[in-house]
Length: 148
Image 1 (cartoon, rainbow, N blue to C red):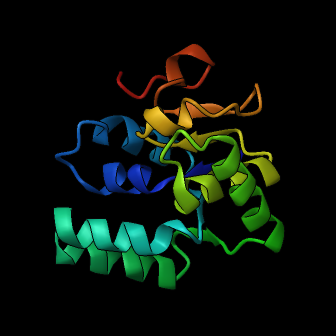
Image 2: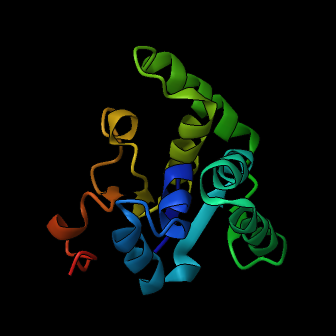
C-alpha cells in the first residue's frame, strides 16, 4: 500500500503537541515503508518544522530525508501539468502547488491514501473513490482506527 504524505502529515507525525499526532503516528508506525513524500512538501515541511517545532526537529527531518529513512518521490513532468490543472479546476480553493502536487503524485502512484490534516482543501477535491484521507477516513474504511 502506498501512502502519500502532505506537509501537515509530517508536522503532525513529528510534533507531539499537534492534536493529530497520536493518530498520524499510529498510521506511520503501522507501515512506515508505505509512506511517500512528494518532493514539493520538502521545503515547506523543513520551514514549518523549524518555525513551529524547533531546529532539532527540522535537522532530524532533513537527516531522515538525506539518508533515505523517508522515501521521496521526485516526480515526473506530468505531475506539474496535473497540479496546474487541479489549481485551475479548483480555483476557489487555496490549493496551491504543494497540495496539488501531493494529489497529482497520489493519483499517479494509485496511492491508497493521502495523510493530511488539511481537510478544507483536500476534502473539497474530487479524489479517486477508493483513495482515503487519513486520519479522517481511518475508522470508516477498514484501516485500524489510530485513536484506539
